[in-house]
Image 1: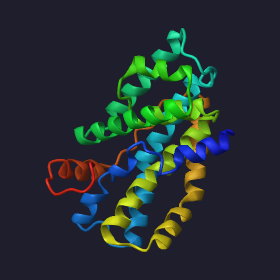
Image 2 (image 1 turned 60 degrees about the horizontal axis):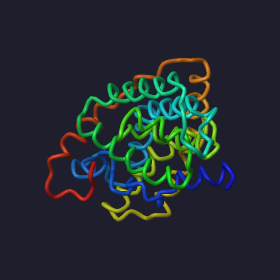
Image 3 (image 1 turned 45 degrees about the horizontal axis):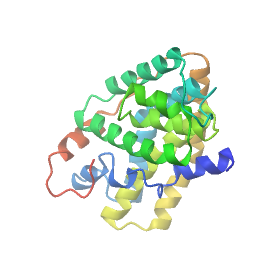
Image 4 (image 1 turned 30 degrees about the vertical axis):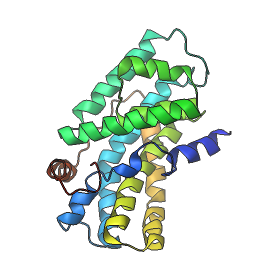
Length: 237
């Protein structure tokens, strides 16, 4: 499988990595009236891309860069301690950028699900290194390592992270509100130029050795916190 085909599979919402079970606070946004239709959904998605999406893109690109030299190797073996340390630092950077406990739990749950599937689909020595960092790594790290294992670049990893930032909320909103799937797809397609630009920026920043950005979305933190204790929820987050 080519790197392009592998990355398309990685970004496909049908990949059984558990992403379909998460709305990233969108279910609560629907309940609270922030998302009512396609227009308000588009506003939410753009907000996510420019805040949490930017952070996820950088972390995914940096994780891919950390293991890219040997991420394609199919057998586990001795690992460069510097690369393992780099992944450990990135996992910590992801942790401190998720102030809401519910958001941290959702990120690690999705990371664990992606590792389970992607490590089978794309065997690589990089998975053993990631396992030394965390049994359930944050989702952007799992994306980065998966991209490297699939033969992708840091920019590819960033683009997948940004794409997934939009698809989970969009899918959740469509299910919860009964939105026209064609219109929802058009909303996602309209954000493609922004995703491309942000992915390129993230990869460039990683190549310059910059630290991950610290953009945040307090509304998302509030939504996932309010959503967590609900007994009538359809989505895990």
